[in-house]
Amino acid sequence: MDNCTGNLLATAILLSAIIFYRKLKLLSSYTTPRLPLGTLGWPFLGETLDFISCAYSDRPETFMDKRRLIYGKVFKSHIFGNPTIVSTDAEVSRSILQSDEKTFVPSYPRSLTELMGKSSVLLISGNLQRRIHGLIGAFCKSSHLKAQITCDMQKYVQESMKSWSEDHPVYIQDQAKNIAFQVLVKALISLDPGQDMEFLKKQFQEFIAGLMSLPINVPGSRLYRSLQARKKMVNLIHRIIQDKRSSLDSSFPKDIAEILLSDGSQQLTDDVISDNIIDLMIPGEDSVPVLMTLAIKYLSDCPTALQQLTDENLRLKRIKENLEEPLLCWRDYLSLPFTQNVITETLRMGNIIIGVMRKATKDVEIKGHFIPKGWCVFTYFRSIHLDEDAYDSPYQFNPWRWQERDTSGSSFTPFGGGQRLCPGLDLARLEASIFLHHFVTQFSDRWAAEEDCIINFPTVRMKRRMPVWVKRRRDDSCSKPKH
Image 1 (spheres, rainbow, N blue to C red):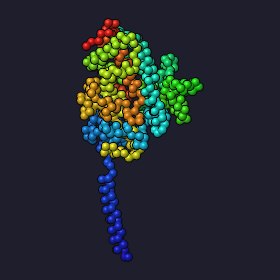
Image 2: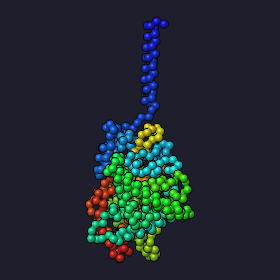
Image 3: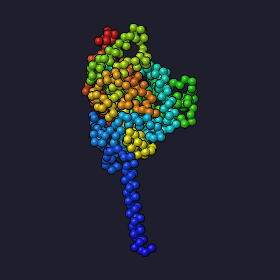
Image 4: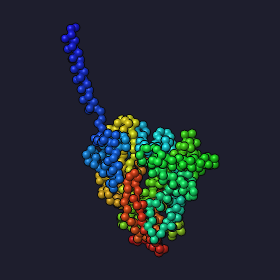
């Protein structure tokens, strides 16, 4: 074969290879799922600064709204250091929440993962996560714990409200936090008010302040101070757990720590139990008190709803007094339909948990949206709960919307969903119901809330801690609700 023929043959092979490669690439563009539309923003920073800027505003969902208008309800972004698929679509979010760890695993900012501990039920997956979640969930649903929570909540609420003065404002957020934290710690480790409780409360407030801080662990930094507070809490909880191990009566566990200890699994070490006890304190300092506070906030802005809730609770109080049953049980509180509607609407509008973050363990396609392996997924509840397609006048507090609406629908997920559904959801409703009942039956409807606004980031809270001027009911006004 001469050089000319050889060159022609080589050229033909090269051209054939190029044509084949181009056809293969064209074919793959049709068969490989496309990423959702969107932008990854600036190098390294992504769109994190824009997200945080919107999060501090009174409409944090504007970050999502701008992108939904351009790209649709599912779009790609880059926030908190990771390429992320953001879902503001109810069906897509529900599918993600219901997926198991073979598809998605928890993924949160570094500061949060460091503070939670490596054994936190929020972060672990597999058999250990299912075991811990199952044990805690079963105990939270037990009539024993509901009766205990009811008794403790009534006691602490009455003690707190007894000290409220008509001469100066009551800061509802502070009072709700103090009550809910004591109730929850009692349920977790059977700790009563006293020196250890005050120490735990102080350290926990230092701890929780760093959950969404910069991931810089050097002396003096926010994360460092929070980690030091966590160590002090762990030492106290270790001591309590060791005392419980030596005198454990497995036939009748009194609290969640004893439930985990009585399981007998070698996986449930003192460190694992301590990590999860600390995690479970978060609702007592954050979500449950904020639920109570926001309910008062929304009711103060909606006199009609306040009047109907007051009438319903005064009616129950009068019935129980006539039956000579002054103490209500947990079934009484949860049987108040309009009160439950108020709590549901508060959860929808307040969005105390703004969403959850997961990471794909493999390539996934949900409702036509491709999520690559290793990418994060952010299911943003706030946009779903304030979506005009799902709720009429979504920014209006309207508890009556729930009179004929199913709270288990795909567009309502205030407690998450799937295998990681919050195990304490019924207890949160119970505590809020007790607080509202005693508030409206002990104080007249002439109470007045001062001007305050909601801050939505890094956690939901009231800027001025919700100051309210109260006026106690007289004996005759307690037994004669308005009609």
